[in-house]
Image (cartoon, rainbow, N blue to C red; front, side):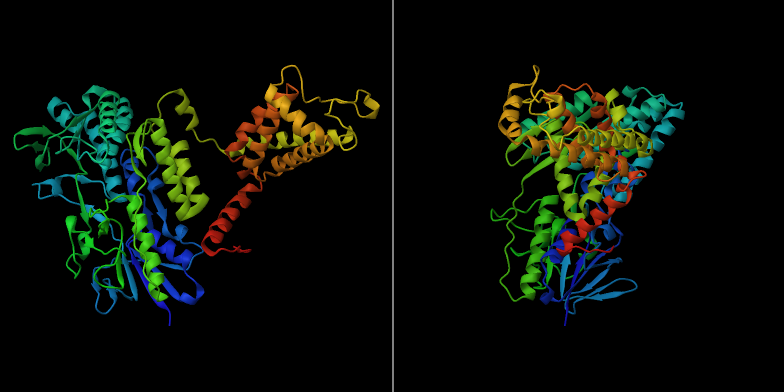
Length: 581
């Protein structure tokens, strides 16, 4: 009889647990895998500030579960569980109930308000996709009201935006809001200096998990570049509809308080029989089990103590580690094997401050500026590739680099403009035609018969060199490569050049693997320029736009690339090729 594994929550830990079970299970394990979530999508919580600050399109932080688990045996259930009977192994919602043999709890965390009067009722939280949309709509509304408000004091309150909490989420939110405020102020004819952005932190510094030098760089960038006030040792003691109180004495008038000052384990299951610890997180052992042997807890919902007897921080990497361990240990339990201890290895932390700056500590290496920002993108790409392959990566790159709304400077204004590939069709076909003619011409002039590039024969009727690879302007290192590798294999190289040119012609004309063909085309032209110094630079220039997916319009890539992406995902999840999709 098959064993049912139910994963409650499609957060980072739950997704990782499901994928681990899918990839490592054997046919003999006879498992049924279910993942239950109230939403049909997985939310990239670390990027919510980009939606709230209107940097990217609204769907840029959600990944639909059907896309993640396509071509797997994982069953997706959209439901809200409000009761669990641990003794009888049953989960219950208002309409259904689900039996399980093994259960993984990954329902994540929620904001903690610490009993601050008025905070829950009068602040905005940033902990879900819908939270981000609410903040975005509210900020836009504040600028609209301010643009029409005749009362200077009320206008000032409309344009004062307070972020409560100077952790990662708060700092990223403030940075994002600063960029959007530049655009909104210009659009509504408001002076930028009239917009006040404030980070309020109760501790003596923001981003306390980082080293002092990185904190200082972050504060300097926030204050000097983004015009964000950073108030530390500032404890919020009361919040109302039109402002907040600091340290029981100071008052700031504002209609916008975004609370990011604390989190706790999701409270929807706290009334059940689960042992909890700090921040109401569920206590687990070294195998990520609760005190029920068939119930595991992962991610922010779990309180996992490291070998140093410190709680594992509520980070994405921690959720992935605990999720993977829970998945593997269920398989061990099903097979009657010894369970595997969770040994989390966190590689570092990163925080982006707007779309052009970040700080990071990666395995002891401190980064700031564009290098840290690049590392953050690489980490995101690595995660997205793991859950969805090239399709989701493509979506991420489109949002972050092509569809970005916060543009500054001439370069960014232009490279973020999306251009329909339709207009590249004509250039693509003509480029392919020219490559095809070049290859056919070489065949006609004897490239398959005589040594045309060796420079050894001068009689044209017997195969004179018409394209010597070394000339006066050829770099020394390239001349050495020619003499060492190419000239001893002249005929082979000539045939390869002809076949490549013919292949490029066919690829561009039919729109097949256009991106790869463009890379080869650029490489061929650079090679020709280094050797012969040919002046046909238009080949090189025309090849560059082909990198933008020119084969997707009236080309084979329109059908081929999506097919291969699906094949890749199917292969990753099933270790075999599916010929029909």
